[in-house]
Image 1 (cartoon, rainbow over the protein chains, first blue to last red):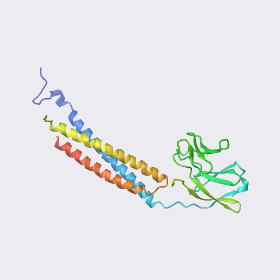
Image 2: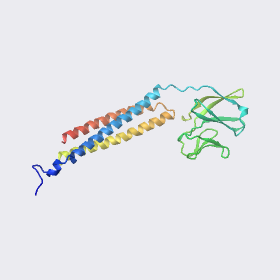
Image 3: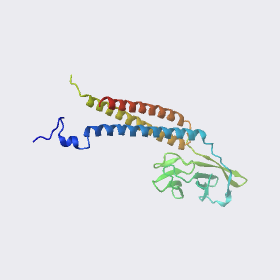
Image 4: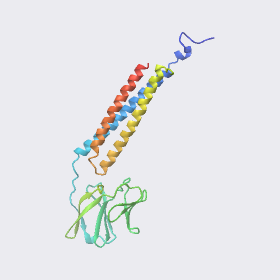
Length: 170
Length: 76
């Protein structure tokens, strides 16, 4: 008993709704379309970055009073927000003559860093990263960049935050 | 020299175009992440060449997609 009709394929295969060859073609075409659309998406992302880099105005850094320098003892730490309320920062007084301030967000994954009086380093508890207190440079761990440094001014004994140095250019 | 059926030739051409498109897409992904990383690090000048190259790669992808559709139609 033969189930083949006039063509080469058996009757059951002709009547079966899924044609394997056709299906292969369709899947390739669909995959090509998917790749094409993803490519357009990547391109749109790059153009968006370009527009953002061109249209975004340079950040404005207002002067913010951090209080009297005498109020912070040597080895002391004070938390503040600068330049906006959502940017936590650390003000440090590592020795008699030095006041430094850095962003509290680790440059790896934005965990909150803290000053360790034992190691005299700024440490990130998430992945054991460490930064120099003097410069904000990465000493160990995965952070790719130094901590952004808050520029300080001493106006007759009163400390002011007046800017942010991202410390990414040389 | 062996002669291959037209359908198989068409499928091979489509596969080649798909592989090339996938490679170009990977380059575009790298470009996007590199441009984003540069922008977050404060470098604004890298965004322009990255965008230009990405547009060029998208046009090449579009050309390959057209080639793929043409191979699909001709091999049927």
